[in-house]
Image (cartoon, rainbow, N blue to C red; front, side):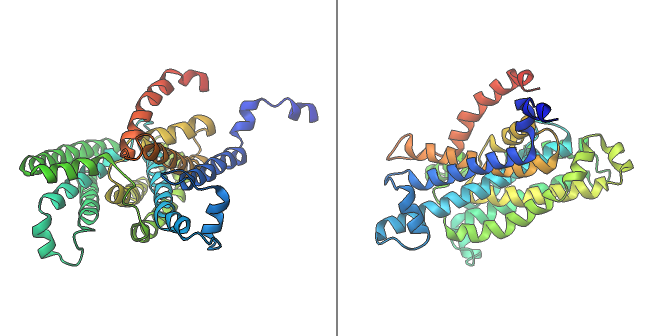
Length: 349
């Protein structure tokens, strides 16, 4: 027995749940510390810890850490987790490793809401003074994302089949894209520039106020998705087999649909469109951990957060003192890596 343990293949050790989750947790912590450390002002780990506990006498360092980098890093973790978990849940629901939150209309609906707020900002501020000009774009982007998802759900609610959900998502995406194009055509140069930068995705505007909105809405949605892990495992066998195993397929689809819309919608509203994370992160975790969602969901949350932290750190230092939109970094890194991953997929099996 002892010899068998000593000669256990390395691949089996990597597939153990505790090993995978510990490694992803360490990666997340290391990425978080690096995100707090690098920038226009390099800050060491000791100074970061002193700032976090309020023990530093350097008020400049404390201000940079607590007011600028810490909320930005936390927003990256929340956004990366939302994209990763939602992507993993939708891939399991649709039984398609290429599925992502964009299929249900989140990105296109948010883009429509954002461009509407940018083009009609002056008029909307007069009619809706409660939101103010600062939160007008995030509020309308979230409303557009949620409206697009609800419209997709309504198109397929009579039969609730996966095919109708996909077709409904395609139709809503096309309609939202056409309406977005109309607003872009009617916009002036400044409005077009604002919308272009929003659509590239960025964490530059992340702050404590945004976290106070994102955390209470995102974490409960991710928890509800995590509690559906066994039902998602059953869905991998097929809808008919899942029903025989006691899964309420219609309710599961609505639950995953609504929770993903909430989690991703608020992230897109606050940070813009960030590509690649929701597709590749669950796929990477699944290649190592297997198809069990009790591992894929938390693993996607941690890897998504770590990946977005690393991408944001690269965006800040690659063209310093300027800053790249993080959505461009994730797309530039993700596209060739995903192609390479598909070509090398056999080596992981």
